[in-house]
Image (cartoon, rainbow, N blue to C red; front, side, top):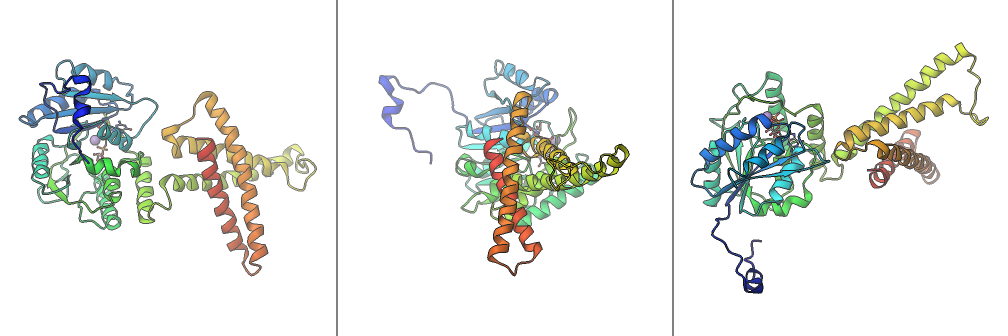
Length: 393
Ligand code: GDD
Ligand code: MN
């Protein structure tokens, strides 16, 4: 993996590329979103904790409105070991961390929250274990002896965290007490190899890394106390929890069912209720306006079903844009164009749906309505998912 550069590369045109500066041995990646109030203290704490280590810190900021990136970049003038990547048009903790790691060239990389909830004094101990070749991955855990979460968690959050860990451990089939920890250190080569398979959405980068690594990793856990947040607010919300469940299903099915597909399916399910609701609503109102006999194109289906379907298609598009593709959200004119493309793709999806039902009925006359419908809806859903992923987002 880390092949030394050829002499020709280093001595290009006769000029040696070496300088007096020491290369960092450890890159600490700090994902940030609206952490302006914590950045300076973070750097100060890292400096104290990593005294004697050749380190650098890399803030990966998703264009925080509070100007976190500006502040982080201004610190480089005071200490060149401080770097910052400002990402625009993208959001996501996992994606930010991966991008930071891939920008590193040091042999060891770490990730730590930028809100001072993680105990940075653990970093040199983690590095020591990796350098002694005792492990490939060192995790800071709240759930091994000596670890904890005093004050850092509400009761619900603590219970949720334990449940998430329990499920994660079952699916990973690895002895890891805190597979959703956001604080760990790893050999960079492990990350470089796994990177193409990692998901950029959600919070569960550690779980994903362990699940996506082909050769089993030697994992070590060190205890720490999760601290209380002093400045700013947590970004872990319900969507993050839903995404985690999606990731668990994906890993349990060997990536056959992706988190995005599950989200797309859930949104599709809401469309059913929207369509039903709107159709019923119109049916209820129509007689008051003498519209109950209105038909569309003189066809047997009533205009209310068409309106119901159109409303459902619209809410589906907006929900998918907001949730399923939150990292590639369409705005302005793109939103309108995307909407039209979405409607076209899903209309074709309806044809696929009905076509598959017809095929099943033709070739398996014995198959009941349920089987035919499940096959049709399934094929339609796959069509809609694949085609809209391709055309719209
Ligand atoms: N770049 C970027 N983009 N950073 C983000 C984003 C994002 O979309 N969302 C959150 N962050 C940063 C925050 O600014 C913070 O530095 C760090 O990621 C953790 O986010 P918090 O919002 O503070 O998470 P938490 O404290 O609720 O959750 C912690 O515990 C979880 C386990 O229960 C984190 O350590 C999680 O990683 C961990 O899974
Ligand atoms: Mn936090």
